[in-house]
Image 1 (cartoon, each protein chain N blue to C red):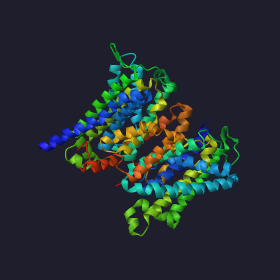
Image 2: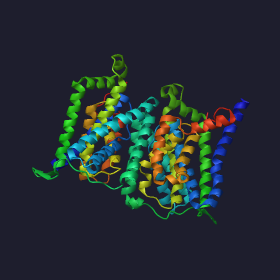
Image 3: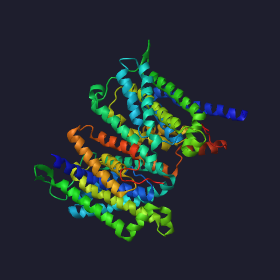
Image 4: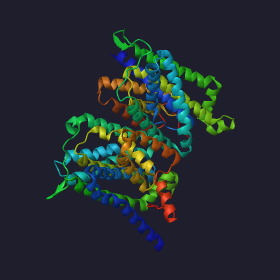
Length: 287
Length: 326
């Protein structure tokens, strides 16, 4: 039972962690908080479905095309049309803008596409696995593996490559980075694109389990936010820890305390963290 | 000095005249249709809630995404206690309960700002929603409460939509004027001082704790009052009405209307409640258009639609814009 819950919690937590990391990257580079993070997942899932069910591409190609399209629409277009004009107006403007974007996505999908939940193909066959008395789905292991690969490669990208280091420089000190000749706007664009790719990957993981629906992003966006805040907004590894914590708290409270109030326990953790250590568990104090 | 006084009077008069059209609209709406009247009532109630949020966000600079939860608290107070006590007791009680809980929710605002505060209040909204859904012994669970009666005093019953609208309009006007009076008093100046620069405000002797917490409590109390009025208007309530999207809607009302301007949320409330009806051709597309409009207004009209109204006022009278609050 315990192992089973651990794997379930890690599997869902991995998805939250990926979204939370995207969130943190955006915050660090641009000081913007994206209230449409969940809808980014929804849009990616629908884009992949567009390539798969409508254009009848093979699954692998459709997923690839969907991720590229998501990176363009949610990264490039959102940065140029929404983030750029709103950035000088401060955070509240962008929060309202992205809340508007979230409504726009959900309402457009219900009117123009479908209000029903649509099935989504899994990348690997879904079958129950048994190990040492615990039972879990092959998708759980797949989620953890994909998220691990994504997070490790993102880490390597940020630490080892030149654009990655530039990104880090902008995140740490915008003015100093400017002086060193780094184009901050370009790096913010890069952060938006990375965030979109992370959202698209988590869409491929979450959609086979929960199906694709116009409001699938509501919960996910919030959980990503919780993950980022609990772990620490200014540390990527904070969001990683936060994501797994949120996933585990959710699964364990659902199993042992109450299914109805599983979100409430995550929220209570969040509120306690915000009030006791506003910078998050792994975060550092900002000047 | 005299000039200043006259100006203040003029401002209050302007506020009255702003409230009046809605009250005057009621007979016209009655002749037109019951549905229009219902929309007018809804607009008034939205105005109360949005003005509450404007006090917190627009004047004191403290974001709250829990307006829907306080609406729910007010609405459930009236729905559950109304039959047992009396509507006339439950109405102020709903506002008072929201006020007290808002007082509590104001304390986190002393520690955290911006998106963290947004998150705490948003979390509070979700917790209230979960309680409303799951504690079905008290709240009726996901089905909510039905047959919420409209009030009566002796022989005078507010059962008919027209009379109930009059009640709502009177309450709305009273609380809006109260808010205007408060925002033009020392309190309004303290709120704005906190919004502009907390450290400076504190240095000048503004108690951050008292004013921030009171801003929260007042804003939440307004939402509670709005909720207490909305329950008999609908006749039934269920938890989904008071979920997060409703809070977002209040935020959009304030920002689309004009943040930190007294008239702003009033215009925002009209845009959200009445405009969909006048744009009936757009039908299902209205939510999409509204979301798009909210984004475009954020980009091109950062001060909200009220700046468009100012522009028209300037063109017609050649004077500076009409500022209802100093």
